Image (cartoon, rainbow, N blue to C red; front, side):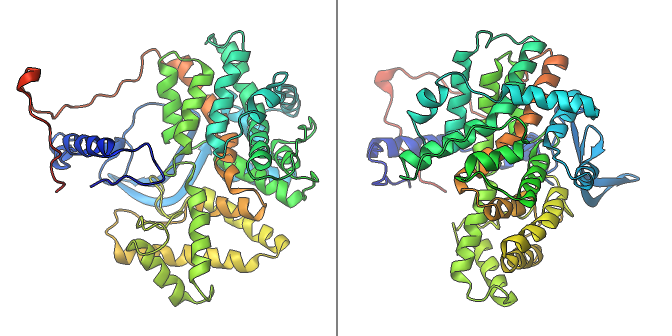
Length: 465
């Protein structure tokens, strides 16, 4: 039974009863999915995605083929066929920032030359400016505690400032995508500063982006009051942006991008839809859950180095007796990867260095212990079809936490990175797609006759089974 909460005064008993009716009349027998061989969530019983399209933008490797068998393997992520680990290794070796280079690679399918990269950075820097009075009239006048909603609103409002907003010719869409890629850091940080000032009562800080700085550097210098940051901080944030820029094309928000693009909709509506998807705690909001879970652990575990205590807490999580009682250990497991998530492995190597710089080695060791124990506990308690390992959210939240980034910006930073992938997929769909994406649903409703209004009895919610 659903009960009205005092927090939601507009939810009346009538609404509660209508909700119960909807739930009972709309609940589908789970056995029917097997009967009709419907892949729920476009996944098979092992969680493997059902192919719905082709892409050249990125690839996830979680298995290797051994004859007729798919054997679990260490995870790999490729951007345009290039191993992301090689990309990051290259930029770190050359002591430079790589997110802009990766954006170029995703959009145009090739690594830029030095001259091409310089020209591309200049284009992004030129676009990193908002329309006149946009900050005052849109961001400052309606501060929002939900940064993703703020970002969506800002993107949709930018439609009104674009004289060619509905033009989906490729050059125009390219221009729109580049402007949004350039401005996502500005929109996100300014949105947070408005919230911090008007809702939390802090000083208002507005720093303009600097054209000579990378995306990662600009995020830090715009966000911090003194605009200062270390090289280690900026490079680790840059690595995080690279790792979040794209992920195989089949993730929820990127699939949303393809679906909306296929309808012929405009760029602003398409990206706003992708943001709506990313906002969900099962997608982009997962790293927030990781941080909140660890904060709860710290309050309830007296000794972070005691494996027995940590194991007991993890068991309590799985048995819905701790934290949010959802039965989940956040940051563990992935819909595609089995043995390892390469993004988590890469981030972990950098987090160690950052923890030493910040004097947070003990916290890093705590995360490492949970990463080690959680798969063991899950294997003992749950029937699983594939391996369980830490995913990117497990360490990305820790990275942002160590960088002193506010929790409200965790998911927008994901968006700042992922818009590069969304833009590449929007262009790919426009170039190659000719039909609207329309998956088939099988109706399992029983046929019934129409009953005249005077002959109908009140529909009474059936008791839940």
